[in-house]
Amino acid sequence: MARHSAFIGSIIVAVFVAHSGPLGGAGSSISGTVKVTGLASNADAVVYVQQAPGTFAPSAKPVEMDQKLYQFIPRVLPILAGTTVKFLNSDPTPHNVFSPDNEKYNLGTWPQGQTKDYVFSKCAKPPCVYTQLCRVHPEMEGYVVVLQNPFFAVTNKDGRYDIENVPPGSYQLAVWHAKAKAQPKAVTVDAGKPATVDLVLAR
Ligand SMILES: [Cu+2]
Image (cartoon, rainbow, N blue to C red; front, side, top):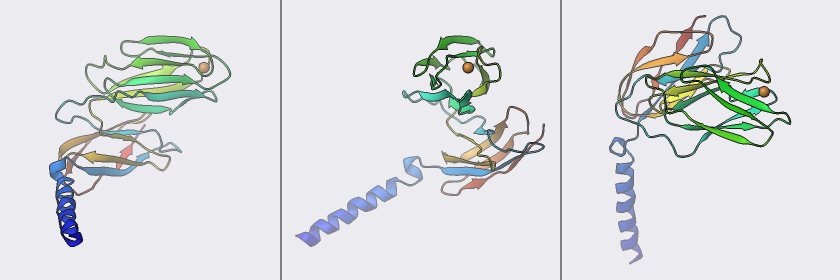
């Protein structure tokens, strides 16, 4: 009887393994390095699939942008169109959040520990870049980058990025940076085969 159960168990495991393959929708990663010519840091570049087939529903859970130590954290926040961003103030001084870009908004000024939500649903033609500013502290600057699909990543200080679970297909891989530019690059993603794309940005 025990042997019989083990046999049934192994069949169930085999079925699950088969479904975690391409049929289950699993894709491959696109990763690589971004070099920003003329800047000390290669951080805060958004690498993204320009256009992916289909429509993508944003998560019901908001993503957060904090104001802490007089900085927007993260400084660069890529999101899927329609996503709600929760703006938090973690400093013991009031901060404001406004953007002069696209449809423009001013969420007001609020004290430590409080938040305000904004839904980024008005970007007709992604990417839409919203500079985040604070009227109280003109030196503060952040960016929300609204994208068509969830296949994006932000580079770390070494310029590394890693976009996971991209469905197999041919894409244009684009990059956005506050101070530098590069042309998109073509990339083909094959099932189960990670793709590597390195990008060099110039100011
Ligand atoms: Cu401020």
